[in-house]
Amino acid sequence: MECKDKCNNQEKFDKKSMPKVKFPKFKMTVIKQQGYCYHGYKPGDEFILDDFTHPPEHFCSGIIKSAFPCLYALTFGAEFKFMENTKSIKTTCPDNGKLDFKIEVLDDDGKVIKKPQTEKPKPNPKNMEIEVDELCGHCFFGYKKGDKFKVRGLRTPDGFCGAAYSVLFPVLFALNFGANFSFEKDSVCKTGITCPDGGNIKFKVRRVEE
Image (cartoon, rainbow, N blue to C red; front, side, top):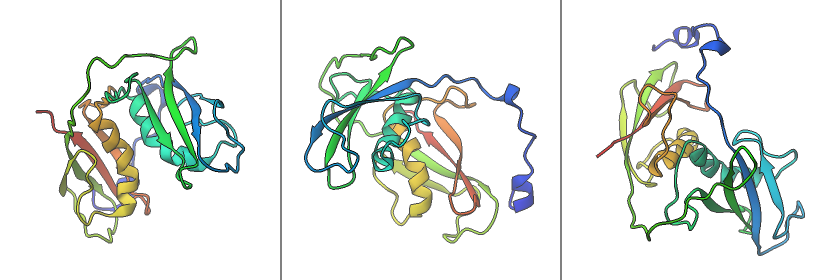
């Protein structure tokens, strides 16, 4: 698949063939304020997300940028063992740290899912591998089909393409904290992660189980 035409020659989209995955709802709560918020958010404000792809209408896109890896990870079963409730996590406004939010997963009845911390965790970064799965056009960095890059925890690969890494990071973050993708042939491997520059490369990311 080293030709743009071949890369675009995909099977006709069929909803019936797509895996059925139910995404959870989330609650995001402002828990701390350290500066003026242009949106007027304040401690105690709560926001409900229908799922990780549907923030509330007119919700701050800066917060969503920070929160997205967390929402994505929790959607696919990640746990944050450094939190008292391991099915939750905190995130911070990228604009000078003006607000802190707590993200919690909701069940079908709209109640917060709680999984208490059982012990103080030790750092346990996972080994992961990024692989160029499809090459569909020119890559400025010269990546080729089959190229592999080792990643440990949240460390970035030296000299790796920043644009590509921006879309890979949520997957790496999720896998590092135990997420699984039940709809994939290999549940610890996410495929189809596409370069934002024309879609010239598709990556897959795999957690290397020990």
